[in-house]
Amino acid sequence: MPVAKRVAVLALALCSSTYAAQIGTIPPAQALMAERVAALPAAERAAWAGYLARSDAQRAADRAALAAERKGMATWPAAPASGNGAATMPLDKPAEWYAGDAALLVAHNILSYQTPAGGWGKNQPRNMAPRQPGQSFVADNSPAGASDAPWNFVGTIDNDATITEIRFLARVAAAHPGAAGEPWRRATQRGVAYLLAAQYPRGGWPQVWPLQGGYHDAITLNDNALVAVAELMGAVARGEAGLDALPAPLRAEATAAEARAVQLLLATQVRAGGKLTLWAQQYDPLTQAPSAARNYEPSALSSGESTKVLALLMSLPEPSPAVIEAVRAGIATLKQLAVHDRAWVMVDAVQGKRLIEEPGAGPLWSRYYDPVTLKPVFGDRDRSLHDDVHGVSAERRRGYAWWGNWPLQTLAAYDAWAKRWGVGQPS
Image (tube, rainbow, N blue to C red):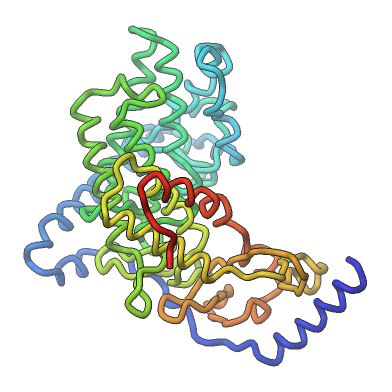
């Protein structure tokens, strides 16, 4: 690192150590449980109680299916490999590639790991061996021989899981018209039905379904999960990317699911000082209030996830006045929060990353903002909440993207969108 920059780092670090403060703690998210549903107004209870019952029944069915496969086995197959699953399921190949052997190998493996509910786990390469009878559905789910194996992420939208599998299978099905493509069409249909079953009554999706508890039950925008599912529902509705072969009733359900997701996003855009601002990374499914996730992820507004929400809203073919208002307000907030002449850099292994002065650098945005004050906030593994990133442990500064330039692409696209729809510049 140049001497001048290192001096700036040290000067800023000294300033930060003087003024940085712990401003609170991060409370854990609440799971969606029957006791909470029972406290809802009477008119809302039936839909949520039915949702919980379907989740419980499906979880029991999933576990029973695996238990039946393992009955009489002295040992179980080792858990499947973990890795970059998306890299093994490319969605940008020419149409003819999906008719070839490489795509068919991946499609067979995807099919073998589809859960009884119709979803898939995350972080699993799909170009390796297919699932064996008695083998876990997800990577790192159940060590061989364990008598009471954990049951984690058995069906999830985290890290683009399930969404990518559906899109890949749809392309393979389209490349195999007639009876040859029927297995892939059925699996695609089951995957879409899984996502429809997982959608909450008010329009969001949990990170894991059947429900797993904890922050996994929250309406999850984190890593753009909800946006990715809503985009898929839109593609199903319009019959894009090989999804036109799905039954008309299912496509109609997808149309309705996309509409519910958009309405949820409009309802959950946070107001601060009476003005619409941004979106949180997670929301409680019942209260629709911002919710925490992992210990260091607070119930705060998120610039990165908000950027993807805005891109989704800007992609709608006929934006309503409410959508236009939401976009204008979100763009205005991002412009207001941009930080210039700062860079987020790795100093060394001891100090970790730091926000330094660097003329001409930026713009940057904090990952999180307090929903009331719109000031940046930062969390740590001990659930402490800080008003300065330098108050966070070096391990978390190294291992998390606290500052970034996520909004740039959406901000750049706004002018053309605004011109198309006759929208003025945000105030």
